[in-house]
Every structure is written in C-alpha cells, then in structure tokens.
Amino acid sequence: MAEPRPRVGAEQSTALEPRKRASVAKPAGWRPGSWWPTDRRQWLRLIGVAAAVVLLLILGTIAYAAATLLAAGYAADLPKAIAATNYLTGQLNADGRLYSTIDTAASLALLLGLRAAGVVTTADGGLVEVNGQQMKLADALASSEKVEALRCIEGVVAVEVTTEVIEDWRTFKSVLPVEVRLECNGRAQKSFKVGDALDLVIGVPRYEPGMIAHICLPEALARIVGGGQVKRFSLDFCEKNVLRVPLAATSSTALPAMKDAESEQTLLSWLGIIDKRASNAQHWAVIVRNMFKEEQIGNPGRLEVIVE
Image (cartoon, rainbow, N blue to C red):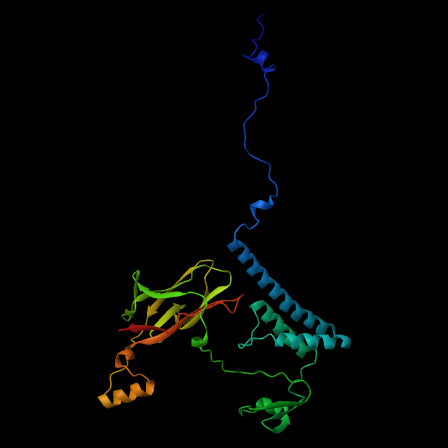
C-alpha cells in the first residue's frame, strides 16, 4: 500500500525564518511638540481663552458660593454672603449684566437666594421713602408714579433701576485699521436699489482672539434674521480677518416729496441738513472692539448709504 505523499515544501518550512515586514510606524505616545503652540497667533488664542475662563470661574464661583452660604442658613456666614453680593453687583455693566450668560445666571441665583433667605424684604414688610413721601413697600410697588428718588427706611429692599444708555461711537478713538464696504453682486458700491441683496464686508489686518464687530444699520438697511429686520447687532470674526454679513436694502433713503419748496426747506433745516443732495443719504456705523483689550478699537467713522 502506497504511503501518503508529503506536502510540497513541508520539509523546508521548518528551516525558513519568519517573514519580516518593513515599517516606519512609531509607537503611539504623548509628544508635547505636536500640540505646543509655536506661533504668536496660537499663543494669543490660548491667552484669550484662558482669560475668559478665569473670569467666568471667578465671578460665577463667587455667586454660587454666596448662594450656598445663604441656603445653609448660618447667621455667621451672612456678612460674607452680603459682601460677595456687593462685589458682584459692582461688576455689572451698563446693561445690568456680567461678562457672560453663565456668571449672570449665577448672580440671578444669588439674588433669588437672598430673597429665599429672608434678607430681602417682601411686599408685606419694609418701609421706604419715594420722592420724599414715606410709605409702605406694598404701597410703593402698587404706585404708578415715576420714581425720582428712593430711600430705604426699614428692612432690605431690592430695587430695579432702568436707565437709558447713550453711546456716541464718534467719540471712540480709532487705533485699529478697519476697512468697511457694502457689496452688491461682488462689487463695492455706495448706491443701491430697494430690494437689493447686499454684503457688508468688514476687514482687519490681522485677527486676534476677542475681536467683535458692532454694527448699527440705518433705516434703509437690515439684516434679515428669523423673518425680522435687525438693525443693531454684534458678531464675532470667528478667527478670520474678514467678516461678511448678508444685508438687504429694505427702503429708500430719499425724504418724502413736499408740497412746496418752503416746506421742504423747513424740513431740511429741522433735520440739520444744509446740502439738499445730502438728504438722500442715511448714516450708519461700524466699530471693531477686542473684548479682552477694551482699548483696542477700530472706528472707520460715520458711513453713508443711498438707496433709491
């Protein structure tokens, strides 16, 4: 009987060395040089983000810490909570807000904590003097009289102050070169027609973290957002040195026709317009500010646009 034939190469297979594959791959590991910033832009970006995070942590932490002390209910901690509240309210800007939504929400939680802890007097108690007249807090809350002067006589009263802030952008000294233009179909223009789709182009020589453009549009132009016409808004450059904002020409800048020349001249004098040709233009403004460097402002001055 014939024996089974051995497999071809079976005898040599034991003598062959294992195959080796060439590779240039290196084992994975942490290499600091791969993420460590090597240029100034990355350094500025890191510094800006770090400063914002630190500010958020400081204000937000103080607010929540004070609210926690109030919720604990220990009388010995009350002076600390009051001191923290006074510090935070001193950081509010003209709009009654702090640096961001996070720390503003934390401050609101603190104010609610003051009321829950019984520090702030409710409508049932408290005595105040409104415009020189002494009355109970409940009567003051029900009054429709305009408050010119207010003084707390008894208790701790929370007061909401509503103010009108007028900001004249012409007073801002420009230290940052800013180029602003309106484009229609890719061409820079100063005169447009009602219904034209425009692009507001704002350019700076170099982007820095924290750069924000503040835009105040005239009656004839608008940024269409959610079906509404937005006239004043702020936008981040998003790490670019050129910001493009879609706009629309919504109305004419020309003044309405008057019945006679005398009435027209009276209207122009009332508006402070000397040159009749200038009456067809409307003014608008753009400034660029750095939220981390408030002294860094780019102000191209008062701008004009004509919509026919």
